[in-house]
Length: 73
Image 1: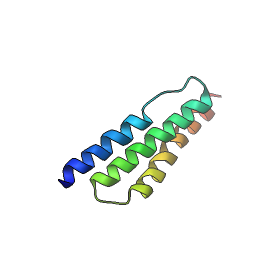
Image 2 (image 1 turned 60 degrees about the horizontal axis):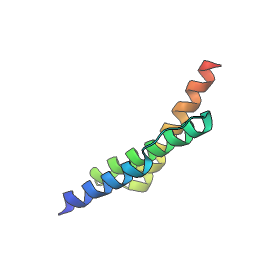
Image 3 (image 1 turned 135 degrees about the vertical axis):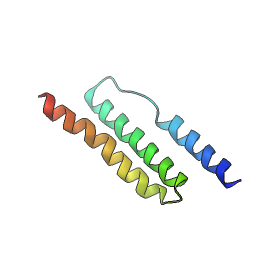
């Protein structure tokens, strides 16, 4: 039962954050959203704190885009 609940959480979170952006700001937000979703899902699957996973993943997703933009300019 516990594994099926985790699977439902994972599918729900990933479906909510899936998407892409057509402007730099939207791509950063999308990257942060996808990172947050992946971090939360990973934390749930590992029996860790999903909020902490979302914060770490969101920072990684949005920050990665930001660092790539600075290199491009």
